[in-house]
Length: 400
Image (cartoon, rainbow, N blue to C red):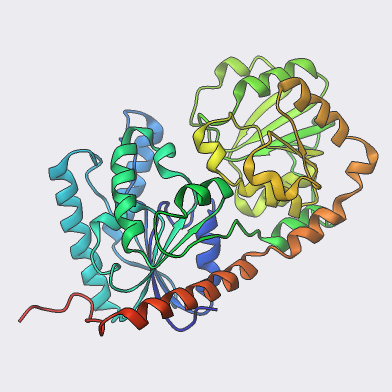
């Protein structure tokens, strides 16, 4: 395990929200190291909407708060930058501002020889120092596909990151095939899962959520962001074909769904705290993964698949490349009709009662086990680079 180091995280999301794979891993590393987490700079221009205004005020509040000490060895900073990444002068301002702030924090916290955890190439392009130190590029998504309006800029900055980074971690076979020849020490690692947390879904003492208790059964459920990659046409087809079933969708709405509310059995109930998800999963009879097939989803490795399995739930999903190692545990469907048929199959008594093999498989894939694997890969990668390097200069040393 990486131990007794400072880890500086250039993050693609804000700390404390619905935990991403990167946050799960950093939580494990925080048990043994000191963490400086730099929140996301944002890759989407804000719009004139109540949702965006709320996010802006939240960002500004955290920004003016300054560096926050979350715990004894964990610090979080929320930067505010100009949201026009395609404009060169704005990138220059953002780079100078972020460089100054991080240099200040490094001096204040007396950070020496950190591990740089990079999960967004744009942020890395604004920061100096990581190129010479121990560094990890954690690639949780195909970022250019996630932010198509900045695809060229992301690809350009990512190319430079891959050339300089000491180790790259990717979470899906498709991403690995794309990136394996782009940089040094590229490893496919997949995801982990919070085994104990989601196993609560099968615990007798876990109570069903009140807002689902009276819904007609069966309940076919999904949780996650409802964005462009979610196949809303599929959800509408399912709701129309099985009006006696309940289809429960948990998560923030980032697309328009008003046209679907006419289906009374298709319920968008909004986001729920991470701590409550096991209770909602207990109410699900089947977990759904309903993405549209795009470049983004083909490169993805849905974390919710492992969370459903850790909760013991049967799953129906399109045949995404990331599903291949788990085909003995999940059902795949290529058409809406086949998706419906697989849901019906998953509702059979043998499948409903066969939760133990799913949970047993996930017990071997915890975040702790994955952090141990990453630490071993990092030790070898860093050692090889250090053998080739000249003595390392102090971070931000003054020129004489």
